[in-house]
Amino acid sequence: MKSEHYSYRQSDLYIEEVPVRRIAKITGTPFYAYTRAGIEGAFLSYERALAGLPHLICYSLKANSSLSIARLLSRLGGGVDIVSGGELRRALLAGFPPENIIFSGVGKTRDELEMAIQKEIRLINVESEEELKALNEVARSIRRPAAFSLRVNPDVRAGGHPHISTGTPKNKFGVYHKNIFPLYEWAKKQKYLRPVAIQSHIGSQITRVAPYRRALSVLLNLIDRLHGIGIKIEIIDLGGGLGVDYNGDSPDTPQHLADVILPSLQGRGLTLFLEPGRSMVAQSGLLITKVLYRKKAGTKEFVIVDAAMNDLARPALYDAYHEIIPVKNKGGVKIKVDIVGPVCESGDYLGKDRLMVLPHQGDLIAVMTAGAYGFSMSSQYNSRPRVPEILVNKKEWDLIRERETFEDLVKGERIPESIQ
Ligand code: LLP
Image (tube, rainbow, N blue to C red; front, side, top):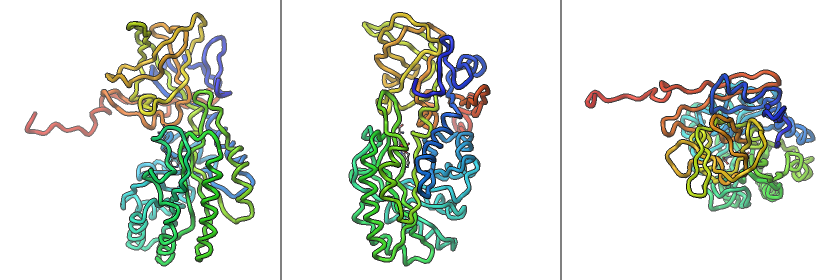
């Protein structure tokens, strides 16, 4: 099992001290369940690794934007990386102080920029010349300072699937590293802009830390050159991206990352920011689903479950692998099965060609490593209400988000009078 917080006891799957079937009995299926100890442990492993340097771990809220999970991390003194006005409001509601909030994203609106400046968040990560101009105009119009970093595209290749690789000139992200100087120089002359930081985020599901070293060396070189033209950078933000173990990936850890980056940061008077998302929560979440039907089509054995691509989009979107295990470990002959959902698309699967004991109707199965980009990317496609979320804490568990109802599905819809 990939996390010490999951175990089989008398062949029953437990999250911490709670049997999964007990939760299922009360909430029904499907649902997401998270281990609090797992999430806090992930945050603390970053904290420990970076203890030797002034730093702020800014959890990338998009990975899992549950208020309760955000609250756990804010209580531990963490920061948060947001990408929209909605996430800004969520972060504040979860209790993050504005000085621990940073704002990323390639297309922030003027309203979002204004809200961020008004709330006096720590940093806005600017991604283009036009955005920098917009930030200046907004800051000037409300006469408030805006601390910002430029997101630099360091031209470093990293990460898994092409959809989540971001650090090369082919991507829409950031300002190409050679082009940043006129922007910082211009910003320095503006009354309300504060060029205090520099940032890069090179990709996601990065399992080896070498690319970070390359990005760091590009950024440090830029910091030195900026210093030469009178711009003093205080914060270096290396983004998120550290990978997790989906399928025997054995990813490098926060400690490995610290080992390669801290030596060149010591003694430079910089504060290090990181923006981890996946590595903070992926391993700490499961999607629990129930077997509806089995059927054989040709040589294929299908197991049809009540969770679908709208609940966990990653397999359909990225061909992502999530380990799938039974909640009751019965033993027996293993065969190859496809685990599929009820949505009317062939791309609606959770796992293909999985070797497992054929489950029975009504059996529960657990989709692992689903805490990141699971619920947060879920939708109501096929008019399927979004599923509840549960947070387990030792022997206790709490419902941290209710299952949606039909009323939630049609909320806000209007049938015009002319067709009534
Ligand atoms: N910072 C920025 C600017 C980002 O764009 C992202 C993720 C992160 C931090 C956090 O990266 P992480 O530590 O989670 O790798 N939906 C995809 C992943 C998309 C990542 C988008 N950006 C998936 O399910 O694999």
